[in-house]
View (cartoon, rainbow, N blue to C red):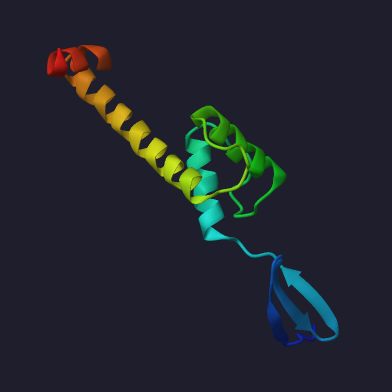
Length: 120
């Protein structure tokens, strides 16, 4: 039977947890749930196709920058407050458009027909 060494948590660093099992230090990568949520949001919006791992990878930063550029925001690749709010607003808008499409289909028309009926 294999001997199992106890794991001692040494601390949390920028790259994740640092633990020690016996004499060997091990870095355990942490998933940032905020980054992961925005990875999912940008995936739904068609900007990110990478892993939903909660890591601020170069691919994710590029996706953020492309989203910022398309919206006319400062193109930094950083999830600042303005970018975070814009992704939330874009997700809400996408859901509303989908819902409007469903309503329009129920009335036998398109979203444009529905808008014309409501506001025309």
